Length: 297
Image 1: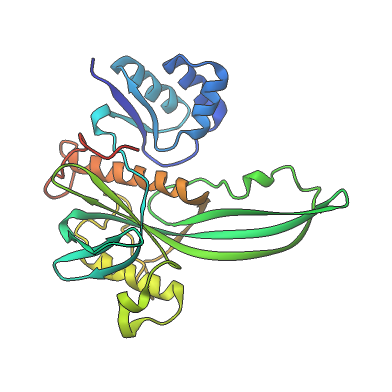
Image 2 (image 1 turned 90 degrees about the vertical axis):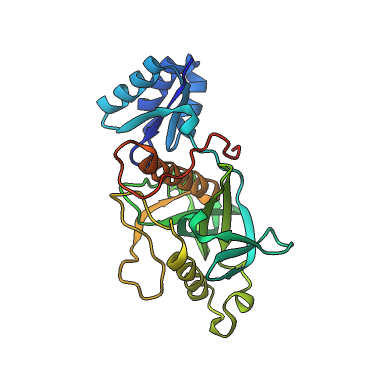
């Protein structure tokens, strides 16, 4: 039996009261399980459905103003956990990455580096006082670069209903973050994560290192973006650039939560970019390999 998945046209939160009944009906879930699935659904709304159920989910969401598309299940992209990188070398022929915190650099040809996305994590450590007691709690959110459409805002959701608490002084720390992906002839996808405070800028930039994390991080991304053959957004969306002083750089107002959410957002971007190359009549150059053998999530 052929299986299909339902993918959002715009990455956004679908209200639970809308999505849960639809998923419950389509997947045969109990209400509690449907609510949990709806809460976690991002980008790829539902998977492994037969034709009729997939079309029904898509049409039901369309009736609620949520645009989706139905794609073959084997087209759904899987990405693994991001590999952290501390040092890299931007050469003319390839991007050389030392995967993990140790190990020799591995070259990745520029025509295989095909998505670059960046944002900023803001960590807040805030104390509050209630009932004569004081406590501290850390929270964070991420502001993404403005690529296409209405993202959603889950800023400080865990603090809803806590207005009665008296806030104490809070400390904010901003950490720039970026994801890039590389394809390979075997169809696997390498998921690399860069963090502004983890990179060895003296090794990467040499004399151009400024000791300013944000500036140096953007300079590294600009160097990568100038060479990466597929460092572009989905057709119809504005391409990204983090080059210092670049007037096209305009961070989105929307914020969304922490690093695992950033991975899901980028997985959706990767999915939409891939679909633009696979679908008949889509604009673009040579098709890239389909993810039949992609890395497991």
